[in-house]
Length: 377
Image 1: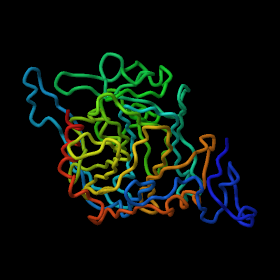
Image 2 (image 1 turned 30 degrees about the vertical axis):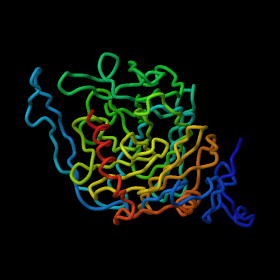
Image 3 (image 1 turned 120 degrees about the horizontal axis):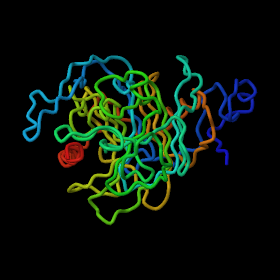
Image 4 (image 1 turned 45 degrees about the horizontal axis):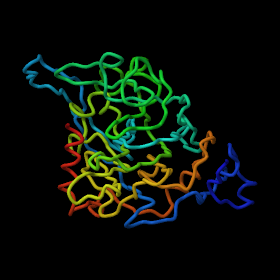
């Protein structure tokens, strides 16, 4: 079924320069009609981060020296050097990956990016549907060792190519068709099909390593987050600087805030911590500028059926938008800048990354401790 993405006048359609589908092609800013009923506080349907980019630096990993078992006492172990950043969206204009933790069923993924500097057209560059082979998209996990990637007793596992059921590693990218069911506590992340062996990647990488999506990018996902028999196993979707997973997602990396902040966006994360509701998914953003987030507001965890979300990282407006859609046409191969602007300017809870309005002061200590448990287990 083709989805009407935006309303536009007949005169605007006649004057437009169109790509498929025609109804998304007007040059004037369009108003999307597939946004969920707007809610900008409490149970959210849309959240927008503004003033995202900035100047500063983060500690880029350049090497890992694991040491020798049984002491594994190399000092230093995690070798870094400051990397300067500046400009709109920085450091989220770096290559990014998106990670998923179960229990979750994923049905579709699409990624759009501008075709040139003008950003007039955003082309679909990666896509996947459950039980089908993906296009320029690779499922990976942190199970490096025998099948793909590498493992050492002191440095742990690198990235690996994920099996079709997303519970183990296989020897090559997408060797098994992904079914879409992500079991509780299992994690995967997506990368492009281009490897760091074919073109060097930024920062340190080891084992199996692929490129992410750089500059402006627009991710769309359809998924659900069913209840788990163990309430401590809670689902999440988050975006990371791709350097983090190429080094060690749960070890030597540039993950965090300040000098450790090379860029992370918690898109929808449920927290199993005192005072937290596992049916509420929060959002937070981390970079050299610090951290902020959705505060007391939250996205409802979709336990009763599938939902579709879009996440736009836009250099031009220095903004990141997270929105719930009523539907999405995954068959469309391109959208125009006017459509992207329509989403970016739609009603949303707005959090400036320069202010403190979005910080969850009351729950912050328990939430951050949950983050530390997830990141350093």
